[in-house]
Every structure is written in structure tokens, then in C-alpha cells.
Image (cartoon, rainbow, N blue to C red; front, side, top):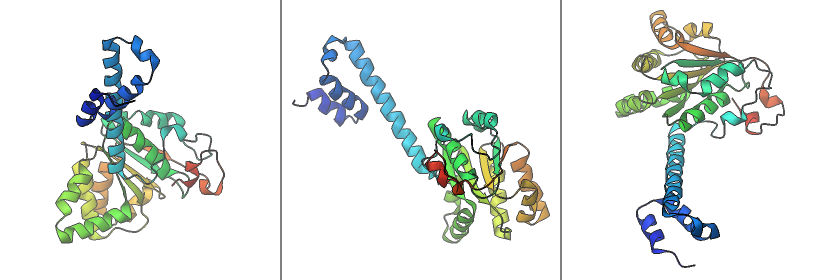
Length: 252
């Protein structure tokens, strides 16, 4: 079948969702029974869905999550790791991000801290929120380099403007003086303005020693901990077990 002129116009206008729906309707016998309003409604619905999908995919690319396939639907609540199901499902609604609160996920290596964090991040991307994922060691490297080549203001702005910032793998190395200052600037800029999620193998009580300098430690932790939800996981590494959630066997 030759392409209808309308199909060319839709593609030229970059109405890809409409164009795809138009092509499909042309192939269906039932399309002849649709009224003009029904035709238009189907085309508009497809265009809206197509654009939202593209925006979601763009947000996911920008987030650069460690576990791209981590999704709310695949969370394993049966695993013995002390996951508070009610709290986690509440977090999936994204209300904590709207309220500008933080989230701390702690637990031993391999219990799924990062994977669960990425599942929450995907839920946030679905809700139209901006997300940035950073491993703490890599973040400090980037910040150090950016101070030297003049990129710090831009990098700092990109990190702090995200509606959800994930700082993965906090500790155990003690922070240097420049790292303390950079972290202080980050948490100060985001405090009360946006949400931050931190994952760590260390219990919160050990974070003061990781920061090192008492004055900085008090100020940083005050801005992170006091309004934060907490998921405290436990148990053996899930990498050593076989689960039905294929992607989740690689979590953390």
C-alpha cells in the first residue's frame, strides 16, 4: 500500500506517534467504522504516549543508573534481608521526593542496596522527576578534576539541580579535606530543596568518623539524617543465592 500523504505530513512534523498509529489504522478494517473524532482521538493518544515514553527514556539516560533494569515490579520482597515492604511501597509513590526528604539505605555487601535504590529511581523517572546517580568514590574524583579544569560550577549545578540525587557506596574511606568541603557544599545546596538518597555498608553511627572533622561531620549529617527515611537491610549476599528475579541476582 502506498503511503498516504497525511502520513508524510505527520512524519515531517515529527509527530511520530501519530504517524505510527495512522499507518496501523490504515491496515485495519475496523478503521472504516470510526468517526473522524475517534480517528483523531486515537492519533492524539498515541502521540501523547510516544512523547512520554521518549521523555522517560531521556530521563533514564541522564540518570545513568547502575542497574538500568531495576524496576519496582521486580522487587523481591521474599528475600530475607529485612526489607520493610510497607515502607518501600510508600517510597515508590515518590511522596518523599515531593516533600524534599532524604533516604538512607544501609546493609552489608550484596543485599541489594543499590538495586533497590535504582528501582526507586526508575519510579521517579516514570513520575517525570529528574535523577542523577553517582558512586561516591567516582563523584569525588570528578569534583577534584573539575576544580582544576574549571568545570566545577557546571558539574555542581548539574548535580544539585536534580530532584533526586543518589550517592551510592558511601564510605568506608575517610574523607579528605577537599572532599569534606565539596560534600558540605552539595548537601547545603540541596537541603530543603531536593531529595538525596545514600547507600552504604556502614551504619549511620559510623559516618561521623568517615567524614573526619567533627564540625563538618555535625553539619553534614544534620542536613542528611534528620529528615531521612531509613531502610536498614541485613542478611547474606544475594549474589550467592539463586532467585527468580534474574536482574536482581546482580544487585548492589
